[in-house]
Image (cartoon, rainbow, N blue to C red; front, side, top):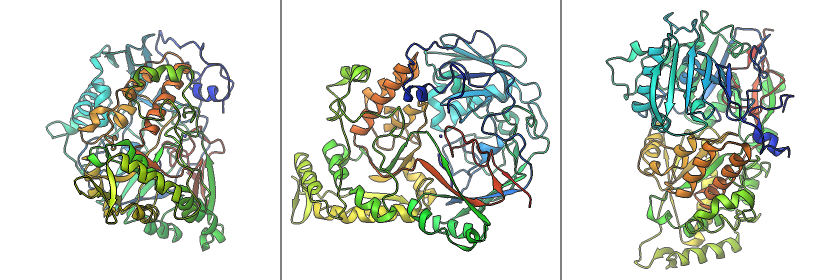
Length: 618
């Protein structure tokens, strides 16, 4: 399963939020002005690694190459095109097969180094960005990666691809070839993040897709420039990637020590229990354990006892993100914040956490908790208050005054929470009539909780079902009995993409450098446009204004304040009933699988496993 992570002696680097967390002044930090082509670009300041660096600090350039890593995924797949809305794409295609102009370092909040692009150049105000392709860049079929391929990829994906690509492309005023190997994007508005986002779009081979409907899902193996090619596909069941021995980028500093396995295989299973049993049988070689209680109590099976499996804990310094049950405000019953607060009151986190997890992991207290970007739960002060004040009339209670989740009880029935919930429901026009919660017209308060029977990236299906079962029982004294529906992965994706649910399990990993993607998560366009991550259907001008301030911020102080203000709007919005998070990743893996001692800032994050790992021969 996957999850969607130390300061060095550089004076200025992309770790500005972390510097702020350590109490070092950042407000006056100068912004880097890239007046000429450079090897990398950071959201603030300059990249940590100088031009001519040897390798990424979390990669092992001496790692041996060869061997196989076998991973498990829940559910199934029916497509090899992760760039479009239709279909359920196999994991790994966009990671191992295709590349972008630049590659992200997961040891810095937001810094990119050249991959397909040899250099990047941007205006001091970042109104445009220009990339120059490496002359040696090649697709796996040996053909060169050209500016024509780049321009076709950007326009096609930006207009016909998944909605997550549309918002950034809409801000591109022009795209032009400026040299044999160079391309420039000029933006219609100032947005400090846009030059970086332009460096992260997948580059596809134009000739492969011409004359075909790009919006349709497909099982045709894409031709990419990445280190792996698709070797075997068993639709819905397994996909195998084989390292390309002729990979053009083998000797680049950004790839040195990465992509060490000859074979990467993903097997798909019906649920997390089947995945775990496959790992215990040695059919899968890495398992990401999401339960602290199970980690402490159930890892005494034979492979561990014999020393064939190693238990590793990977720390990280990233935000908690948000995980839990999301309420869809497109359904009128959840449009009232008092109803949503009542639903939160009835979720007795201490009891659930102790019952299912031994109380080991802390609760998510806000979307960016566990980081400097997280909100202060007291009254808004300073620049955060200044940013929010113009929207005071529309902000929900607690946004400015301070908001915290209810403490809960160690008993199954939290009577104080029940009294608060009943009062809130009554204020919203709902009362218990003949044992059932109804409105003045006699209509029952009824809703459906949608779950993926295959589990998710951060929770197994059995765990989400156990959490929901306890929650459903807690709602009964309120006169509410939700209907719980389990769907297979394809149906779950279809319904959630089109917001056809009342309440559903929701997971959003968040980084130390939130930016334009936040519009895809919380922007008003997602109220009606399918395929966004705004499952709650929120429509908040204040939230969108904070996102604007984030992406336009010219110093770290402004950026941090804008994110903290956004965190307040989201948390006090009461859209999600949050559960726990882990400040570490727990990985059980075959003992011959190794990773570098130096783990990155983001820890176990996309780009870490399997990219930095290797297999040692006996």
